[in-house]
Each structure stands twice: as structure tokens, then as C-alpha cells.
Image (cartoon, rainbow, N blue to C red):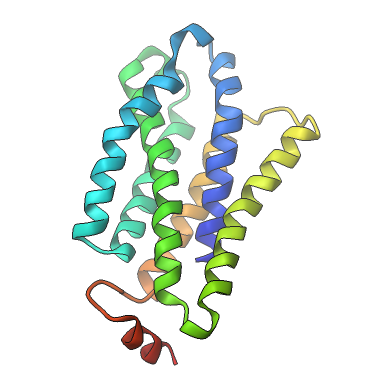
Length: 190
């Protein structure tokens, strides 16, 4: 979960801080309102994600979001100028990371509270939350030090790779918590 939190922090803050500059470098102007529109389109996506969480499970939602967000970031990394020529593709590939990473962080905070044993639950949840901010702090530090925005490929891969790896790790190692009491989860963890 720590790697998932760290990767989400990289993706969220790196993507949000560097993508406007990168889009301008690709020839899109601020008048295009692409990021604003993508965020508005992402609102219904967030509602669907909320329903999935309620109907499915924390673990499955995290895995699905991690994989979908990773795939969209990988496509974003390698589509380049094609996205400028096909705006619908740019919107789709912007909506998924914007909504997906934020949703991963939201579900991760709840899932952390479900899987850590009662004796360390608050510390474990706090540490997981701190790791998501640590990824952001690293990105903000790079921005503050005036590091030039990396290419769109680097930005997207900085988020995609940790999300993909951690999504696989959650699939393999993380316990399922749907319809299981906290007491049973705690006893199985021992």
C-alpha cells in the first residue's frame, strides 16, 4: 500500500503541476480549457467509481483503478502529437488520470483503515497518507528548484509505473475486505 500511495502522489502532483506546461509545449493554448473540461467530465466518472466501491470492494476498486489509470498514463506517454490532433483522445486520456488517481487516494485511505490491525490502525493509515503526500512533496520540490518540466512521456511514466506495479502487488498480497468484519481481518493478519 505504501508504494501505491507514493505512486499516486507522484502521479497526482506531477501530472497536475507539469501537464499544463507540457500541453502548451505541444501547441495547445490556455484558451483551450482542456484541463478544466477534463476535470468536469471526470465528475461523473468519480460518481461511477463511488458506486463501484460500494458495490464491489475496496481491493477490487483499487486494482481496477490502478490498472486503468496506468494504462491511460502509458497511452498518454506514447500518443504524443496524435492527442493534439484528436481532441477526444486527449480528453479521455486526461480524464482517467485526473479522476483515477484522486479516486485511488480516496479508496486507499478507507482500505488502509480496513487492513491494518487495530493496535496500529491509526499509525498505518497515517503513514499511508503521508506516503501519498511524500510523492507530491518530491514533485513540488523539483518544481521549486526550477527543474524544467520533463517530457509528457516522463510525466506519464512517473505515475504509471508505480501504479502498475503496486496494483499487481495489491492483487497478489492485499487481503479482501468486502463483507468481512474487521475482527476477522485482524485475526487472519496475525
